[in-house]
Length: 114
Image (cartoon, rainbow, N blue to C red):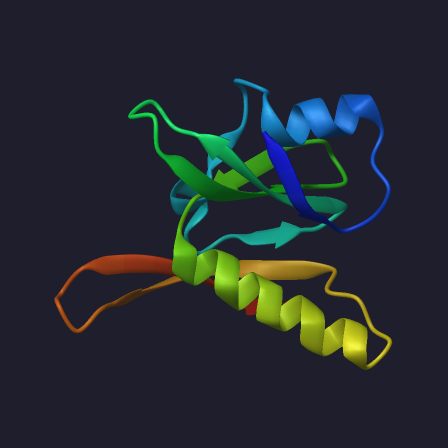
């Protein structure tokens, strides 16, 4: 595992929850939900096929974790955070949204939630 970005300094327990916990929920299962953000981490790891993949996990203030390997979601989340950080703000919550690609494949993404 290689940590690529993190929203703040994390304790070892938080890194475990964000990267290894079997109780982490799929982000796609949270479609339509608003997720408050306590911490987030983007990391790369080897999947079951032996391929490297990038994952994003978000932890709520209640300790729930949601993870995705969706490139669209990860990129949109990164851009949103860069925009807000560049203006001295912080993204505190997102809504999990979905759409259809030009090839009629469903994808998930995130939308800023105030």
